[in-house]
Length: 207
Image (cartoon, rainbow, N blue to C red; front, side):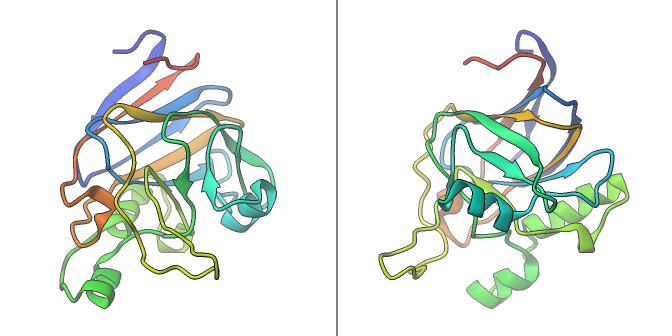
């Protein structure tokens, strides 16, 4: 277990995870083998009707890529988390989560569940459900946008390397929900989903 950590866990490839991160504590997500997509949602743990809001976040940061210093804003424009460290230098905000219906729509594969189903499984542990899923963040993922503001493809292969990490500090008691993406039909996991590590600590985590 990492020094000063309250929690230090491995999330297996393709599996969901959640925890309440106390205010001012840190959540660190480590891409152990590199090129692994991590779908992420967050909520006010004391009032989950307040949750991550992509439009507020994008308007505030004025870019599509999240990195160090950016706040993850809620639907009432309050920061839920702040990114304090980012060794990967940019994370997707527009690609959303995969699901069995979208996998069939995009790739012609049937009965292949994805991150949406993982979110539903994990949210049910907190009394939440389908209506509580909003457009999510994809850590270690890249969705390119060209000069004409078009998305020529959904995901491209991630630039993250083994050991790359992102750390977030909770600005309120925050419920963090993760799907360690099981996707095999686009390059977000480089065709091979792998384990990740998550650490909750009182002080910033250092590799």
